[in-house]
Length: 327
Ligand SMILES: NC(=O)C1=CN([C@@H]2O[C@H](COP(=O)(O)OP(=O)(O)OC[C@H]3O[C@@H](n4cnc5c(N)ncnc54)[C@H](OP(=O)(O)O)[C@@H]3O)[C@@H](O)[C@H]2O)C=CC1
Ligand SMILES: CC(C)=CCC[C@@H](C)[C@H]1CC[C@H]2C3=C(CC[C@]12C)[C@@]1(C)CCC(=O)[C@@H](C)[C@@H]1CC3
Image 1 (cartoon, rainbow, N blue to C red):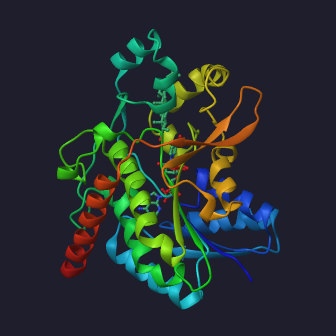
Image 2 (cartoon, protein in one colour):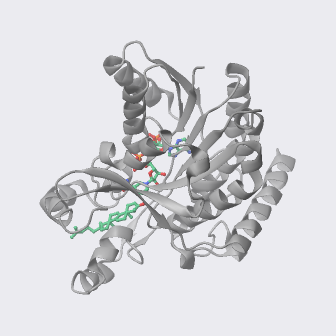
């Protein structure tokens, strides 16, 4: 039977590299690029069809940061397909990032330097804003829109005698101290990205608890540090060009500098090949690249607990009711 794969944020970076790798793996699958910008989505589709001329590549308009768009995209999916086998929740934003230079320079001369380059913990802040649904934009895009999409696609993901995989592109920047149950949207802090990624780790755990019995399995991935539109937005372009040799040098000391989108998509691709029942719901699957350029996937236990994940799950169900009431 034809496998149906939906990838959000598929028009660039890690999402596009994943699509390329999936079609190389299985040219018979039906790939659906779920994107907010249809011009960029069309360009991505053309690029994929150039390397895989007989592939089945569909486009779906989805602004994951808009409640209305998520609801109508989910309806469109139900009209087009009879099931969904893989749902890659990859779209993500990090608006107005700022690097804390003092922490960076201090970190460079500390024993924590490898950890700092792997996670950017305490190094990055962002400036968030409220979107047209009245939600914080980073939370809405990186977490809530994707959660709503899963909820709307539940009948397609939970088919009798079949399993489905939901795969979140999280990050090693996900940090417990950035997340608070009292402020799940991170209105009051300066690390909405870190908070939203930690929340996705928690929600993945809760989804497994609630949905495994219906055949839905959720996993989280960290692609490593990858040069994409998102990372290029952190520093001015000329600065990236200047420090690029340093980036390749750092790769000799930490396997988390995957750098290319192809390498970054390693764990996302690896999960496509696994039986979802055999995966560990408490592990994050990391894309890693050795100093010699060898790609591999490694699970690492996450710093998450059941009660916090359950409370966040309930809070998101409540928020879902609230936003639907307001429509
Ligand atoms: N690069 C890195 O080092 C790391 C990245 N990640 C995560 O990987 C994921 C992919 O990012 P990456 O490839 O790096 O960056 P890109 O900016 O290249 O890709 C992000 C994708 O998400 C899409 N997107 C953003 N907002 C929305 C929205 N509201 N609705 C639909 N699509 C949207 C973008 O579309 P558009 O072109 O329209 O903007 C784009 O296709 C993100 O979740 C990111 O947090 C995690 C760890 C490290
Ligand atoms: C190389 C030098 C001297 C400076 C670059 C410093 C930072 C710009 C860079 C160091 C660690 C990087 C990093 C990310 C962005 C760029 C850095 C902060 C991420 C936060 C990008 C997105 C993610 O989700 C993380 C996994 C990355 C972690 C490392």
